[in-house]
Image (cartoon, rainbow, N blue to C red; front, side, top):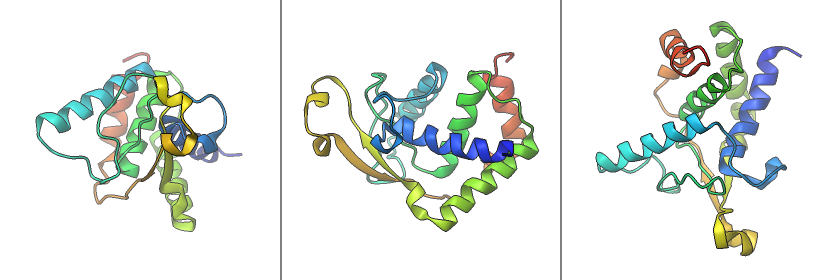
Length: 168
């Protein structure tokens, strides 16, 4: 299997893991690095300071550092950047920019074949919520594909690896 194929599979597992999507299997805790949690928390604060709402009506309103609280991304582009940051902070991205672009093409092909990839089930596993039936803890979320493709730039790729990489 080519590295792009593995990265695309890892991407979808990552996105569902951030949402604590029960279809992922595994532990019911939000996946991702501590550094990515801080980035997402700061992004939420930016929305609040600018008195803006996130892109979708069904977005989670704020980031909670409890690992049982799900997190979703408004757009596929935000999720791609978050995935790259997460892999860089874990020191787990030995791939080139060319491989990153081919990975994105595979991810977008998945979406083109089946738009259901954009749909997540965000499941709250915090405190007392963990005792309630799954239907009461779940919220449907659909990522959008926005017009902003700056996540594809070589400058963005290099910046993320320099800033969040183990050496950075």
